[in-house]
View 1 (cartoon, rainbow, N blue to C red):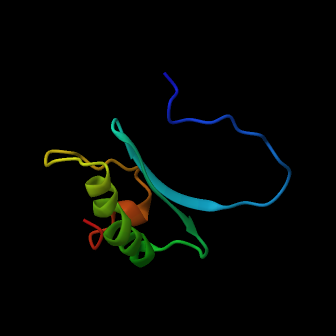
View 2: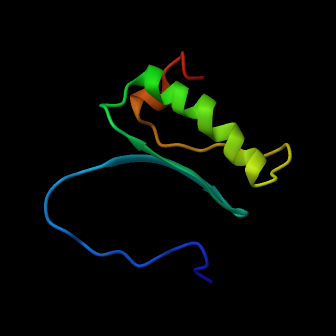
View 3: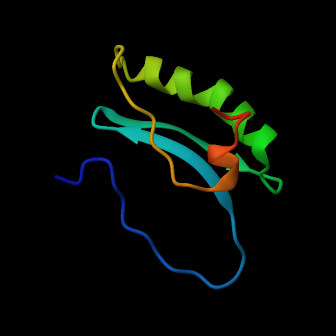
Length: 79
């Protein structure tokens, strides 16, 4: 079932960068990134939004955060 999705409409021009998370329990926070993201900004977004999202979704211990292999996601400082 598509309970957490909505239809989209294509539009012309512009771009927007978002950070978001989701789980089997539902969607977490969705953050608009207003600047070019770097490793420090990524770590700040995680610290301010990832754990609060997990708590809001009432996720207990044992969950795994997955991301792609973008360099700022895999930097030593981020780990």
